[in-house]
Amino acid sequence: MIFHEAKLDNGLQIIAELNPNAHSLALGYFVRTGSRDETPEVSGVSHFLEHMAFKGNEKYTADDVNRIFDEIGANYNASTSEEITLFYGSFLPEYIETAMELLSTLIYPTLRQEDFDMEKKVILEEIGMYDDLHSFTAYEKVMQAHFQGHPLGQSILGSVQSITDLTSEQMRDYHAKHYLAGNLTLAIAGNADWIKVLELADKYCKHWPAGQSERPTDEAQPKTGTQTIVEKKTQQQHIMQLGPAPAAQDLLRLPAEILAVVIGDDSNSRMYWKLVDPGLAESAELGFNEYDGSGTWLTYLCSDPELTESNLQLIQEIFNEVNQNGITQEELDRAKNKLASRLVLRSERPMGRLSSLGGNWVYRQKYYSVQDDLELLNNISLDDIQTLLKKYPLGHSTTAAVGPMTSVVD
Image (cartoon, rainbow, N blue to C red; front, top):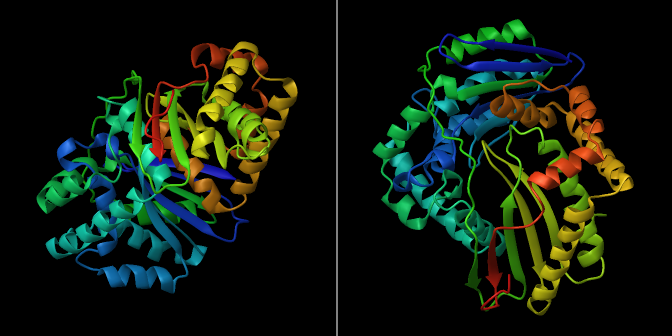
């Protein structure tokens, strides 16, 4: 593996982890913009823009974009989160120029009015689809409650009202403000020639406007409380709970990843053996989510409504025990092995390396090889776990419940 980095005059950052022995190539544009960068008036515009990107520009129509990607056999898509909009593709190395041109086209689409009007209907349908997913509703509600008054509490999809009211002019203004070269990172993983990469970046990206939009990253001060959304037709109760955890730039993020595996992984964790294996719950998990300046412990429970209260008590008992006594060396070693295995298996494909490569650069402006990640992982000790628990004990500030129960005892 050979790492390269460069920056165009307009501020576009280019990073590459090249492997001449790989049989494929993955490429992605990481745009540092998401729902947290929106105002209430344009809520959902980042995700809407992700859809509009595939409508093409003056040179390529929407049909052209999708047809050409298919012709070169590319696996391509895009995603929007609270903080990053990502456009990516993986393909055979010989098609790098075609793929680079098309992915660059996605960054600066024409944003035609007729495309905007048509895609707005698609977005509204998507919002309706997710409204029917009770776990998603619980997540949206708990994020809004936990981050009330903080940008991270803003919905990725937006609301029916915000999308209905959104105008194409507002979208163009948002795009012009946030899709600046200094807000973008071009990441490449796999089999490519670095000189060729720089030539193509210069050819397709050097004319992009320079600049970078600001993002306040103050740590959130979560609000406490419980929200209950009654869905009488639902057979199961969905519970989401959030508590403060390390931010993306915090050295405690790796101990947090390990602890989440020990306590709430979907197999062989404390919550699994206490709740899922005995049949008390369909799902009982703990996750760690990192953001710019903030982080969360995310607890998810899905179970029979009649067992919800006792299950929540069991989860709290697990948290209390860990906060007081920590975890064992055996649990730590097992979690390290699980994470190391996942890391290595994912890294064997260029597409698997792309998200780690780009994410580390966007959040930390640093390159970590697979070996670097493994070394960091192996160096985590029980003392690090104790330091983490002292600063960010397991627990929750906010709860959202979706299901037949009219109230949930928190």
